Image 1: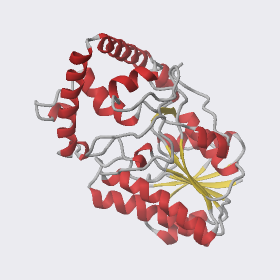
Image 2: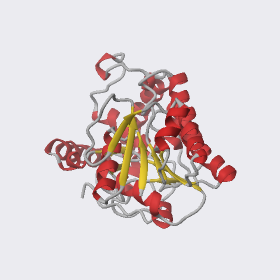
Image 3: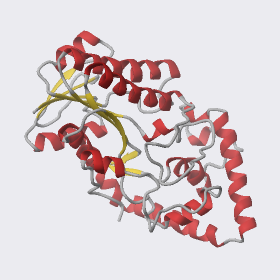
Length: 335
């Protein structure tokens, strides 16, 4: 099968390219690097904002994996983020339609839910989060990912293009998940959380509430959308406090993570699986990134939720739809 990968020279794209090349696929990659070394694949410079060039690169392909995009709202301002991510995705689907291609896999994000980069607090109605949960995007990047999923819906209705929008959380290179640095940091965070859980409830709640108040001020001032280093943030924000990192980052992505090799698996199955329609799919590991008790995380950091049906270190983000629709099954984790 000949497949086009937009943005295939990036971190996630290289993992996908390796997997498909190893399986004997004819892989053609486009991107904004003048040249890229991708063993076994062909490469061409092409901007997805240039429709005619994009369509030419797509000619002869049977499927498309679309990754090219701004990956966060702090790379550039909202307008170019929206233009490239949304209009660029429209161009990809439009070119696929013109070339008669009926299968597209696109990279969405866990942030299509409206979490990590947002200016408001998260308020999950239930856990594990799934694709049926209402979204509440409040930053340009997350909003762009919400809209690209709608573009997939539009082209299913318009042209019968079947597609999946893969909602990736943070994507780790496989080696990082078992590096000494990662394991040490994870063990320390687990120890800190366990110590926090042992505090008297009033003391524990007061500490978490005080930290969350600072974080919501930080978010409302849109510091998440700046390119400043943490050391340059105003001194009122305790970025060196372990609880700051947990409440600012981990809590907002539900401790979800994925190995880059599993993103490649999901992309392959998104092309080969037998399904019709346009579908958003959470793609992550089946356990939380700390590999610790999920009920403890819920009790501490989502106290307004009633008891939730999770056991052990089960992920707070459900992958059941991906399992059912495309046969995705995580192969790598922090276990």
